[in-house]
Length: 201
Image 1 (cartoon, rainbow, N blue to C red):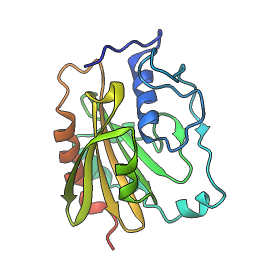
Image 2 (tube, rainbow, N blue to C red; image 1 turned 180 degrees about the vertical axis):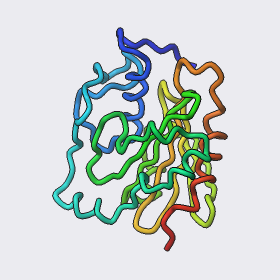
Image 3 (spheres, rainbow, N blue to C red; image 1 turned 90 degrees about the vertical axis):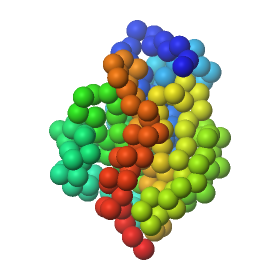
C-alpha cells in the first residue's frame, strides 16, 4: 500500500479528502486527496463547500432516492453506528446527489451511499475508477470497482443501477484501523444487506 502522509492533519481529515476525490463530479478547487505529495492536492477545507451544478440539477435532485431513508434498524443490523450518520460526505454538499454516511461500529471504516441520476455506464467511463467487475445486486445490474491512486488498497465501491440513475455504495477503511476488513468483500456484504431498500422500477 502506498505510504500516506498527512501534512500535520489527522488521518480522519485525510480520509475525508479521499472520499471527496472519489465521488466529486466537479469539486471546488482546494479539497484534498489523501496524499500530501499528490499532484493537484491541497489541505482539506472546512465543511459546507458546494459543488458547481447546472441550473437543472436542483430539479433532478428532487427525483433522486435519499440514502438517509434507510431504516435505522437495517443500518445497525449491518454493523454500522446509527448515531454517526451524516447526510453528506466529508462535509461537502454535492448538488444533484443525495448522500449519507456512517461509521462502522468498531470505527474500522466509513460507509457511504450516494444516489444520483447518473447512469451506471458513467461510472465505467470514469478514469479514476478501475478493476471493473460486472455483477448483480438483487434484481439490479451493478459494477464492483475500485479507485485509482492512494485509496486503492483502502476502499471499494459497488455501483448499482436503479430507475432514473444509480447508487454508489462505498467503503473506505481507516488508515489506523487495527483489523480492517477486505474492502470489496465488506462493501458487498453491506450492499447486499441494504439492497432491499433500493427503488425498484
